[in-house]
View 1 (cartoon, rainbow, N blue to C red):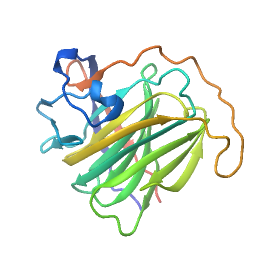
View 2 (view 1 turned 180 degrees about the vertical axis):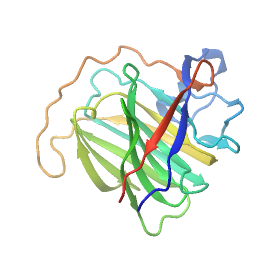
View 3 (view 1 turned 45 degrees about the vertical axis):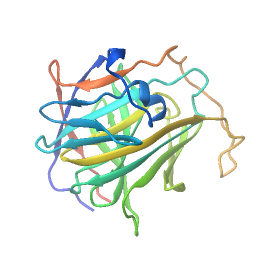
View 4 (view 1 turned 135 degrees about the vertical axis):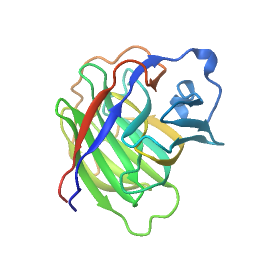
Length: 238
């Protein structure tokens, strides 16, 4: 599949939330991060088990919320979220993975409005699509998951492994949720579970190699303050 053109994403800067603005449950570690808000790009409001993120008029805008990696979690986590997307092929929502603030880098593992499943990486050269695949029979909400095996990850859809990859940017960093481009997104039941497997399902053993984790979780949110970075998304031919 060849993508036509490029998608410019406006990456918002970040600020620490005041704890008095937080009052919702259903998103695991993100319960201490998420906050209802409305600005020129996004309307973020709680649902029964999570949050609805709506962007009606800002193509290319991205909004994410995350928590930092905790001590002892590296390479052992399973991250999951239930996602429903109402939009077009470029409407994406799902898991923010491997977030590093300085230098800024992260992965987006998302469900598209066309029922595609996508993996993008943001690094020194901007956004790049690493993987895209379609799954027949997807209807309604889909559970996306990432299972860590050291510096290797398995990509899960509704609990089933669909692909696997690894490098030294994986198995560490902040995790959270993300929505990209215009669309209506519902993200619920976000969870991070840590527990070291004896081995990956293929039987290969692993060892942790990482920098010390930050000692505390920081409650952070996207905002439109400051000068945003303008990024171009390079899409792969599949």
